[in-house]
Length: 47
Image (cartoon, rainbow, N blue to C red; front, side, top):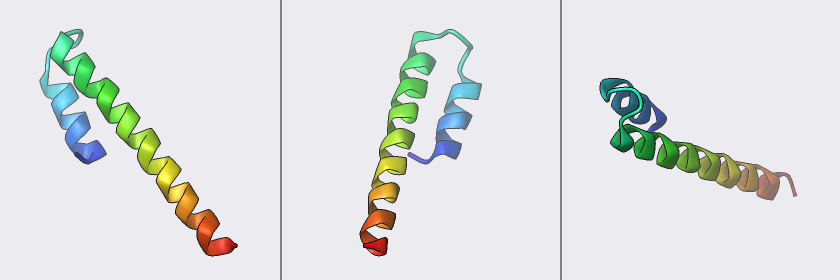
């Protein structure tokens, strides 16, 4: 799921709804994971 999809899902759900909160949390995790992986790739390219 892209961050755009995450934003759409989060905004289409009622604020404070359990489902929306779960999705937002998993999106944040995905984004952190993606950033970490990208960072590792950059480091691998540099060294």
